[in-house]
Amino acid sequence: MKKNVHEVEIKLDKEWQECLDKTFKKKAKDAKVDGFRKGNVPKDIYLKNFGIESLYPDAANEAIQIAYKKILDEQKIVPVIEPTVDITGISDANIILKFTFITHPEVTLGEYKNLGLKKEKVTVSAKEVDDEIEHLRGHMADMVVKENGVIAEGDTAVIDFKGYVDGHELEGGTGENFPLEIGSHSFIPGFEEGLVGLKTGETKTLNLKFPENYVADLKNKDVKFDVTVKEIKTRSLPEINEDFFKDLGYEDVHNLEELKAKIKADIKTQKEHENEDKFLEECLNKAASNLKVEINEEIIDDEIHRMIDDYANRLAQQGLDINKYYEITGTTAEDLHKQMEPEAEKRIKYRYLIEAIVDAEKIDFTDAEVDKKASEMAEGYGITVDELLRAYGTKDIVKYDMKMRKAMEILTKNN
Picture (tube, rainbow, N blue to C red):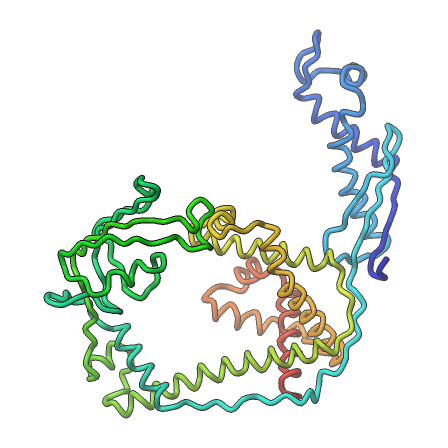
């Protein structure tokens, strides 16, 4: 057993009787016994009809909460994840519970300074600037109808289509006046490519195959699409002039050279941010490799479950249920759990590393500094400090975040 795994057995006598009484009062409200009105069954009659064992499950749940608090108060254990609990003995006289707690594992901080890492120098080429200007032109482009001509890469084809599988109409495989950007890869492979070269009014039958990673009942199946081109739209790029600069929100730009200077500065700023993030990751990775810590499998599982919950919430915001995601991708909850395991372990190790640096550097902040930071954060979000703390938790969490950020700053500045 690892040093940070603690088994605690506790027996409740008086408290168990209170749990049984409390459970009886709840159950008696709905109990039906011949000769007694609902909710008026005496305890001895109730026990004679249903047995005291009928109270055990709910009473045990109450007892677990009482025992848990009692252990934390008396033994000052600080679990890092929810403990497991087993009922090792139960009767009408008492209940015996065995809790298994996992506390913070022992961490030995290795070398975290002078790691021999160097931050890359940020440069911006003329091609990058030109490419970004073309990207902005494309973003600001108007879609105009291509009166004469054929569908080309980058065009938007307005189409009617109908799909067939095994001679039957494909459910959900029909569309009218559907705008499809050629090159967006919105449809299965071969669909968009098959439309290139068609004119407005032309019809074409596409004989394709669903890919291997498609939904289970359709993957690798042959599918036929009848497609009619209703309209072709192409991008009309804006000219590089004063109107273009204003549309971009660059009021201080008046010519192409000034635009290039502005774009170059923007790209450099973005690259510097990315470079900082990349360098921090390199420092964390190198310093974490020098860290000595044995991470419990249960801690990793807990982190994975948190990550899966976050992922499911993000999917839900996009209108996709996690179970539907499994169906579409042909994966399972176990697959996702396994996939997230390396990232979860890395996150935990980084967290322990940074916390160890906080301790080694004796990083701390006064209440006044924490209050100032909370006010700055609230102002940045456009909310009050009280609203921030309701969303964030407590000032202790703000303080913890400040310590972690300071530790990361020390890590990057000393390498």
